[in-house]
Image 1 (cartoon, rainbow, N blue to C red):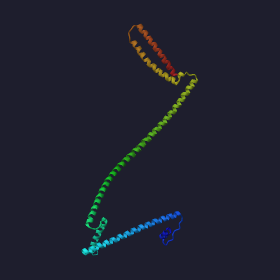
Image 2: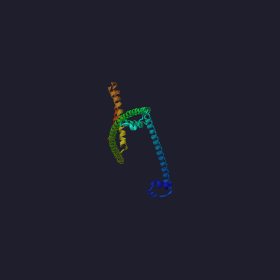
Image 3: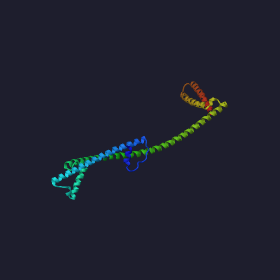
Image 4: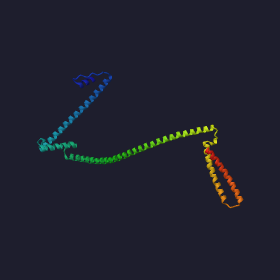
Length: 269
């Protein structure tokens, strides 16, 4: 079957060489079968078209004979204008896909065509409205995109500026950390050196800070005593008793001032 099909395909031309094996034989057999089915379908379509052509010719001859019998009229007797009109009528019937050229066939076909035209126009109007809406949305989208691009540029510029500020602050912070560590090491070394020389621990930086706070506290305590002393000075009691109270207040004030002086001297050292 494959050999006969190849001979039919190539005719008088030599058949090209090919490798004969089960796979190629199967492929060629499949192609031969499909070609046979296609040839059969094409033959059937051709026969059907021949039959329809014969039927159309018979119908045309019948109509022509009927026309000749009824009005003794033949298309061959038409003038050039009449032939054009007849051809236009036939072309219209073909375009409208009517079964004949009668008014009963033309009017519904024309009405259907008019309805289709109105539907098409209505659809076109809907498409135009939708297109206008899309154009409006597109314009708004483009404007929004432009605004977003400008905002993005501003944000990038602001971010760049802020990043520069942060980098500068980080550098300053690193510098301050390094200086702080340097000062801390210097203070620690100075304290160790002073301690090695026998300096009293009470004169260290932390102790002096504590003494300064204590001094401020003592100064606050002397304020009411001074006010109390001033109140005694304004009184007019027994001179001897007032003198005793004044002396007591002076002694108390002297003690506090001596302590303050001592603290101040220690801080200055």
